[in-house]
Amino acid sequence: MLKDRLYYADSYCKSFTTNILKEAQDPDSNYYVVLENTAFYPTGGGQPHDTGTLNGIQVLNVEEVENEIRHTLAESLGSANQVEGVIDWERRFDHMQQHAGQHILSAAFVELLGFPTVSFHLGREIVSIDLDVEEVSPEQLNAVEKLANDIILENRQIEIKWVTEDELHHYPLRKQLAVTDEIRLVIIPDYDYNGCGGTHPSSTGQARMLKILSTEKHRGKVRVHFVCGGRVLQQLQRKNLELAVTSRLLSAPDGGVAEAVQKLLETNHSLEKSLADAQEALLVFEAKALLDQRDQGIVKALFTGRTVQQLQKLARLLVAESDDILVLLVAENNDRLQFVATRGTSVQMSMKQVSSAILPLIKGKGGGNDMFVQGGGERLVSAEQLLTVMEESCNKDWVT
Image 1 (cartoon, rainbow, N blue to C red):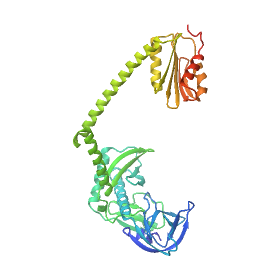
Image 2 (image 1 turned 135 degrees about the vertical axis):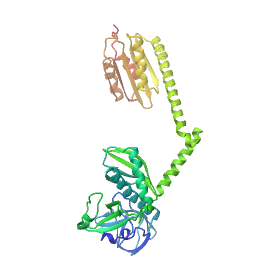
Image 3 (image 1 turned 180 degrees about the vertical axis):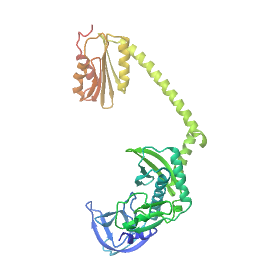
Image 4 (image 1 turned 180 degrees about the horizontal axis):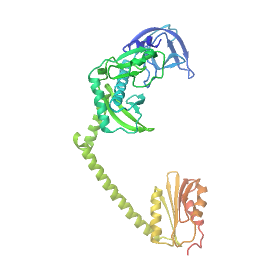
């Protein structure tokens, strides 16, 4: 029976001795054993499996497959008939803290706001629940977090009861159960009644503390990220270190980091605007220089490391200065070639003939209209060759 499994009989069981029922290899040639009984919790219900050792050999995974709990090992147990199992207690107790915190938090969302939890994930560093709502306000999160920590501070007992389906009506369950046989209830009296197959501490106080870290929208629901117990201290230490480093970099006290960052952002925005203005002025100067170098009404140029956006802006500046020119620009960027071709308003030709001529040469893609085309592709020819083909594709009698 489920309730006879050691991890259910005593969540605080750290070591045990039992018989080996089966040793085999899975399809990936990993060794696994099935035991007469086990204190290793198998992955399930949003909670990861336990780790530890069997006869000193590392347990890599524990999962229930075809009604048997398989303990995947780093190597074979050899001819042993019995094993001594040792649970990684730090990992187990962390999972117990997080899972208890999830029950407390989910119940707080229901009690205060009527928001049900629809899924739960216990990650390596952060825990999350998904709420069946579209939005949660900061004020609501603060209220829920306070209630959850009040329940933890009260150190209420966490009770485990095995009941039948006929007995369920005695308990105000938070949500409907999917199982009908060997029903396991996790109960925080006068607060939360929930069917659950995970491991939990014996009292809420052992969860120590709960902190909501952030929320995000996920598939039409709100995902709440949080931590409990020792993970709260880990998060505090990590964030305190980040704050200290940032404080030193900004030469600002811890309490003045936000103000210093705001000033830095404002300065950066001002510098970016000044740089954009300078680049714009340089493009205007460059456009005038290129116009002076036009050859029979064609302005052409090669560049290295220019973006297609820069080519577009330069081309538009050129035709704005003179409406009777053709502009042919090519840029090399690593292993790619990009181009822009445009014409002044008094020129009678379609620039599509330019892109049609060169795109096959570079296995490229492009778009545009009769006045302006752009595109890019692989550097299968040199930039000089591409520019030559662009020029040759133009009708020599195009100028009006």
